[in-house]
Image (cartoon, rainbow, N blue to C red; front, side, top):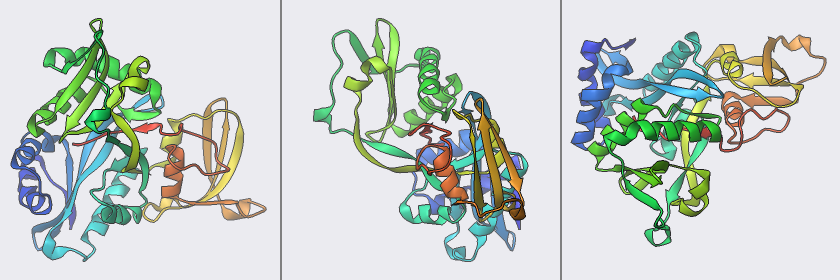
Length: 339
């Protein structure tokens, strides 16, 4: 049986979580004491025992110019004695159908390794963002006399949020809402993990920040005036965030494209049947219209046949498909998440 846990039951999932994830105790304590109550926890039960689970954590995201509440899929796990029995398949399918019904534009997750990434691809997920490795310390340029680098304090968070929102919403098409609440939670997390939020200050004005965890940069945002010289991120990248379009029509309402034209494609979705079929994309004056059509409507077979994962990668600017308009700029998806 698949169901969502009541608030009073969520602590009961901790033994399964600890069995599947080798997290430090202080991190697990933090998650179960501070964050799990805001999550929706879906479980698959067998003979009254929770054998598989995933957590849906609400996040505020800016899509184009629209603020949306979407869900980050976290804590995907199955009891070691119940693996390879289809429990996770049932759980993922149910969760994605539920997200479709509430008209979620997309959902995302961060796979722990390539083996899990291959599993998520079967559910329609695709990579949409890379992470960049931190440069060796000897190659990291130090601040000049007019540029101060220091650890962020609670008193800095309002100014930090103002800087971050201005930068990220200008630089990216899809990004987390970097408000004060975001930085409060992030500071709590890095304090637990032994990391820090480092800020750059020039003339009492915040012009950049880095979030450090385990001696690696989790997130770096710098003003254009210092980005070229002060970035501590290398050009070496690796795939990091996976996402998948959930409600196709809803994501289109929140994006815009330049120019005008139309495209016809045949779309396949292994989970959400409503996303299967023939679609006509038409766009003009920045607005996008999408119509689902019957096959016999078209005189010839559509030239574009895509999976929902391929369409997701294109829409989010990660891997472009010739014949479709550009929705997001290259590297326009920016979500460095944790919990």
